[in-house]
Length: 219
Image 1 (cartoon, rainbow, N blue to C red):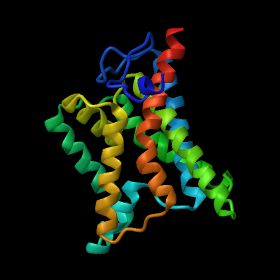
Image 2: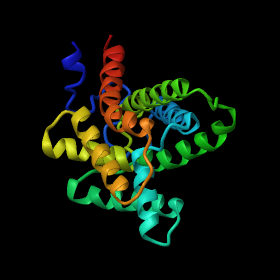
Image 3: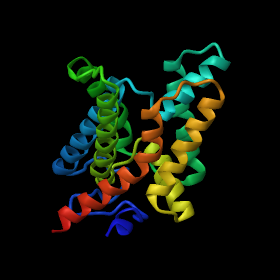
């Protein structure tokens, strides 16, 4: 069973999955599940941020690039997202309603939730919170990706590379995050234990999320 969970090679479809990402009239249930998944995703990201044990790999990359340029981390985060979207073109990855809502909902949830989440002082609790956040992001990814309304920039890169290579999603996502954090660290970005946890853990977490959601729905 564990090997089956971590060997998921595509995003499964269920009864409430959209027929195609570019669907501008999806069912209300599909949109509701999409928004629920993105909300949980944002909450997971917030838990990692407030844990204070390290930034996510993509933020490490933005920080590293900011050292080499005169641009801010926020500006570079936006530019990196645009660059990732450009990589979708050769991968033939299709955007959708979910691609647009991904940016809006996740950003809004992070902005709203940060003041209300715990900021643990003990390092052990910081790591525990970072682990919980990583698992929640992975599980939430499983929820919103199965709606098939279009992934966010980084998730789209993951599904695009998976389709081209045929490798399990867990391997593809972990490889992307490890490469990103390695480049960011080489450029001078700051890493912490939570960064390593996310880089190595998000791929398996997404795979578990996809497997569990599809298994629950099929029952």
